[in-house]
Amino acid sequence: MDETVKEYTNGEVTIVWKPGLCIHSSHCWKELGEVFNPNKRPWVNPYGASTEKIINQVKKCPGGALTCYLNDQKGKEETKQAEPSGNFSIEITDGGPLLVHGNFTFKNMDGTLIDRKNITAFCRCGLSKNQPYCDGSHKLKSVGK
Ligand code: FES
Image: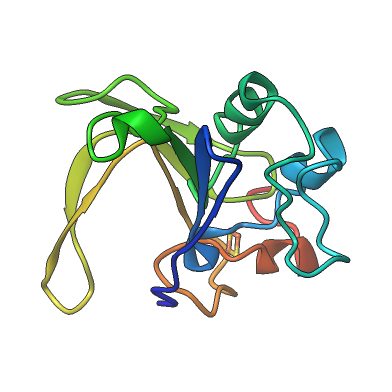
């Protein structure tokens, strides 16, 4: 899995991008193109919208590739996409990944235990090159239909 982590800040909020978790849903750039533009480098412009708009958009990231934290709360409160601790829910998307909302631990194929939080998108089409996570490759094929 791509373990890259990049951060972009406007001085108030820091957007954290983990490309290894991106499922290419395109919500970010379609809904807040002033901040997220995959045709530009860097593709994230943290000055493109208000902190409130950025936080609200980041919360919609279905794969958990985008998170953020307020700079004065670094290490304390990363923006949550789902309620924390102990419980989770599972959502099967139409033609896409299996989304697990919440905090949980799972055993990976090699036996390692991995803690996950917020939202995790598991591939169910078999095409992802980032197993067990979805990488958006399902768009090449319709799954679960
Ligand atoms: S379900 Fe998205 S890559 Fe397989």
